[in-house]
Length: 264
Image 1 (tube, rainbow, N blue to C red):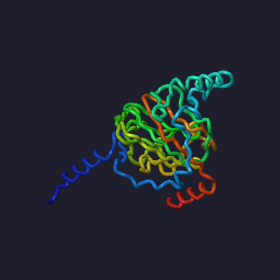
Image 2 (tube, rainbow, N blue to C red):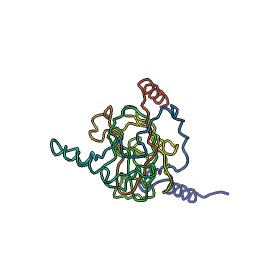
Image 3 (tube, rainbow, N blue to C red):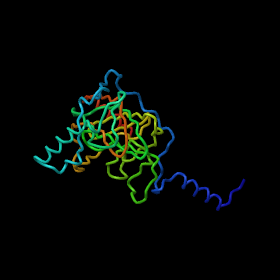
Image 4 (spheres, helix red, strand yellow):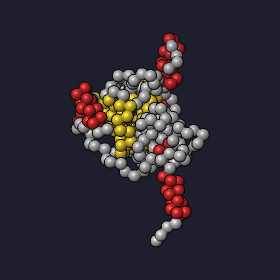
């Protein structure tokens, strides 16, 4: 069948409307990405950082609330958040649970180059995030939220896993694909951090591929060499389980970076 120029133009416009989001940029694909490679170390190489029984090894901290404080005021604020931690967080059925309030769950231990395995389940209208080295963040969204043109850099409909606090429109800031599972199901992250470079797999789909994670606290500086893992509280219940980590040694880190750079 022969199509007129007008018909072809209309089809092209329809394709654009379907494939572009409300911000005028291509929407993240919801089709499966290439499966993430198997972890580079056996399961035995990972160790738990949450025991599934109590809050041992964790304390409360919201770094945003104390970043401008000094001296006694800062010490008092830090002490208060530690004291109220157990009022906002609990352990239930082997899960670390928060209803969206209070200080962030923060590891007593600090980490450098690591591979992190973690599962979460959240609810509609909530959002959260995973801070690496005390720095925001691998973002968790309610992907059903509709894009708001009044907030052009806030795009939850593109899915979770992106480095939300990076400069807008930079690589890694938004996820490569939408990989979130429906509410009520558990999502699994595999996160690898080497220096300032970050890889994120969400439900076995690559969503961030070795991009630089900016230092939110001072973008003129790289990420600190070490820092805690933090689980953000923000707007609604979130549950975490199976939190495991393994340290990445210097030789392995060098190899991974070389292999990654060779593919670009």
